[in-house]
Amino acid sequence: MMIYREDNLIGYDDTHTEQFFSGSDHIREYENNLKKQPNDWIYKKKKFSYKRNAHGHRTPKDVKDLRKDFFLFTGCSHTEGIGIAHDETYAHIVSDSFNIDYYNIALGGTGADVMYHNLVHWFKNNYPKPKLVFLQWPDPTRYSCIDDTNNRIIDAIYKNNKFKSVTAYGMWNFNDEQIDEILNHGDSITSPAPDYFKVARREIKALLNKYNVNFLEYFMYGQSPGPFGWPKTRLASVNLDIRHDVRTVTMIDKGRDFLHAGPKTNEIFAHRLIAKIKKIGW
Image: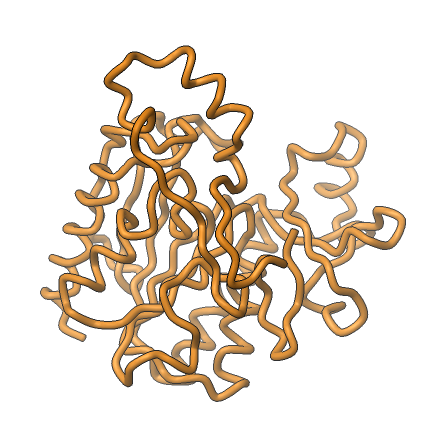
């Protein structure tokens, strides 16, 4: 579960704590895999945990401790690094290669609406301006809702001052009748998911342009096809400012949860981003 902080940033409800499992990286599945996987499975011996800062974000530093120059990463679980250690995430590898601080504001299971909300309040709070923002676009059908008022589906962005807890939803969470309602009469429940995504994406880019912040945008998908039939082998495509310079990375290993990309894939993807950053300059 995620909550709103005093500065209105959304983050996990646990702060300055150490958890050994999170999200799809669940202890029950891990214990099952210990029995099923071969003896050389890396996670039979390798341990890691999830540590979150004062805002409930899985990132090395609090906002106040960032050096003047830093990168800001946002997205969903692929960027948060579910299933792998924090120093194996592409966010860490990219930043370390430039010897620069980074802040990872990505939250597993969330969509472009939460990305937009947190970026708005990052600048509204006059937090330090990043040298470069990395936008990893989540599943387009995903959006987050308040879930503590008789299960009503309410847009978290516009109701943030009245409620505390935020839950991530996707269209597959609803039955057929509800899906039809969303698609045919979106305003009665929420905006139709694809349009919702397009609006949030457009607003994010407008916000970054307003504050004159350079950004890289890209998608990262797992191997399982999503609702739009994503190719099974594609992990990520990288686009800069909508130019048609696309690069593809195949998932060659998986994290401890067998759902997200593993350390080797994150490393490959990180080096693709590093090459892109050097090419465009920052």
